[in-house]
Image (tube, rainbow over all chains, first blue to last red; front, side, top):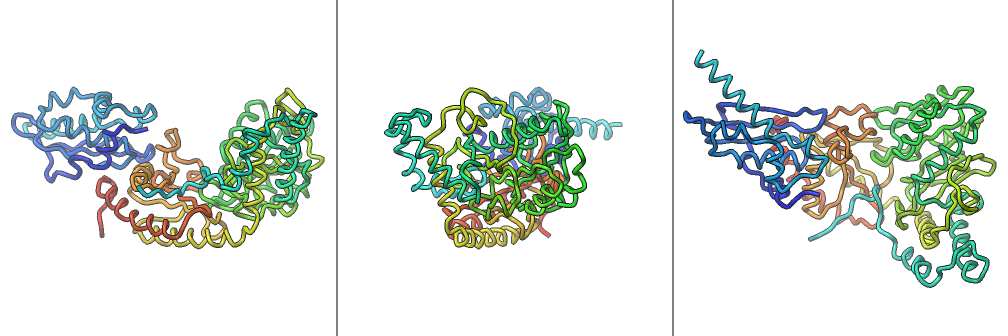
Length: 127
Length: 387
């Protein structure tokens, strides 16, 4: 049911953990549906993602998509990262089972929340 | 890689002796049991011998056994059959919140057709109260259906007590005994049931064959047509090899059951104790009134499917009541009916044993489980960390 790539990310997740004093944190999901993803960002002055980490409660797809997106956007600008969709993350993993496409494929949403968090913090600092 | 099968509530391995008994009927003895020539007679003889064995195992008469394609069909024939047959008497059916979907959905379908269905709640252990059944019976109640043992959490229901109540009140009583055969004594008179469903592949028989016990005098309306087989209740040429397999499997499952069960129970208890030694875990279901082979735990801060995948990579096959494994967005209806919160339900893990398991396999599971839980917890945003 899962591709080899999904299983690889599930077993050897990239960038697990937290970033202390993160510049942006984004969380999606809830316990009712059984998936919670949290993404931490470290962003430099050029708005490039210098570091990214995640913590996820959820199924294999939830963990694999979280892991995959961290690899996809590390070193990218926030503008580039913003363009990534949940669908692209699933494609990066060689696809997900149909049932998982909607419930557990939320990593891009979590990343967007983290970017929004970064931007609102920055706006507050500048204000 | 080492393989450990701990999903025996889903299905079991075919017993070697069952396989051997079935083989001739897959090839050489191919007659249609309805044919009157020697080919047919030979097949008929095998079907009737299997019927006798099945009846003997349940304390029933051979003519009270109807072979079906499995328990789902048996449940449908029983529930829909009674509902249609007793239409003039009433339209009220009583069941429980933790039944298998074969029962719940059959009742739901009847609800759409104008029947009234009472779905009784269960307690925190998944147990229904006989008093609740008694209180729910009304003048127009025509059927009560309560499972003998729950497939997810292993809780053994007070079916004999409920059977007594139903008999006193003159209401037909059906039990889904799928998980119970070979695990508990299943005698239709002791349980005071009128209808009982079972499935061969749950006790080391083949898939695609089951049976419905129908107590003499119980009226069922037929809703499938096309032949006189199985007293017209289940028309169609008999699955001869399957039925032969069922007969042999139920004979094996119910012979010397006590010794087998006590061995399985010892492994179960070791597994439960070992798993509960992991911090922030809990047992789901009843601590004592529980199937001998059922272990159902919840591991806090971790989701069920991720544990299944991790165990699978170690060759261990288990299941979970998490939403991710149910094919829907909701976790198991059984765990939710028991009042578990979402996190506990999503973090459930079911390990079900059979006589084929060994204590060494239990040791293996217990040796890999703490690391699996620790790894997933380290990834979990809801895990507060070690104290």
